[in-house]
Image (cartoon, rainbow, N blue to C red):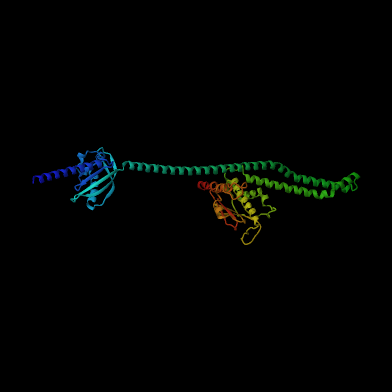
Length: 462
């Protein structure tokens, strides 16, 4: 009996020692894990903690064992922990979630907690939790997000700056080309005006002297007739010289010669007048002018291009001028617009010579190349000038870019693509009007210029 009791005492003691050994071994094992680990009973009290958990929380094991979340954390944080723990205790489902908690130093941490339900042989329930600190990872992710946002913003700013620079460069190139073109036109205008002035003086002298010279010649011929009447038998030397110079032919041809000289001088005077009208150098300010004079002077400048060539017949110009009052405008600049549009029309008709086909006014059959110029008073304060050709027309994709700077369908060296762009600017910006192109392949092209009869500033001041 005593032996049995001694044996039982020894067995209980050995079992207790074994339990203590197992618990110490378990504690050493979880202390070797770097992640914080805790064990709670179903009263939500800590009953087992590793060193990593104590260090992470900032309290000793003695301060935590037997305590709950409410003894350590703020109520708001403890409410969350308790609720999540209760879910595991109630459902038995493993739960993983991100949580925030404040340590003993007041620092806030973002943690990922994985919680398991564990039951022993007696049915007691325990909650095992493993914590991973995500604070640094979250800070890095936040920093990366901020960096990405900064990079995206920098990229967007760079794209915007690049676009602004491209726009500025395009405007600069456009302005530069317009300045060059304007300078060319200004230089051309000054040259034309200078040439016209220099030609005008001698031509006026010649023109003014042709009529008196003609009269003097007629008087001399009359005197010669008197000599022939009263001295019908001249001496031999006079008779021989009369035959030598063919006096009868000279008397009939010389008046014709003077008439031709007069016509030539008048033609030169007309050209000089057209040159002066076209250049309008002395009219830099806006003033009221006859639009038809501007169109006619422009056509006079390029008259040679209307003539027939080996490749095409003569270009016929059909003018349908309306009854227009004087128009307030920059005459020289509008003449430049007429020049650009008319030259483009001539180029289009010359391009059409490849097929030797032009469209008629009614667009029904082939016909000779033609340019139509029509003017009309649309409203009491608006006129329209239409310049059309019966060429092959402009494709839709090219028509969309017609007024863009540097766009041209002409071969290299034949066009800069600035003519219509500058014309559009002159009509719209300088005169408050509109410039429209109506065209389609096979139906010809028409440019419609609309400008006010009187500029808006004049109307506002009236």
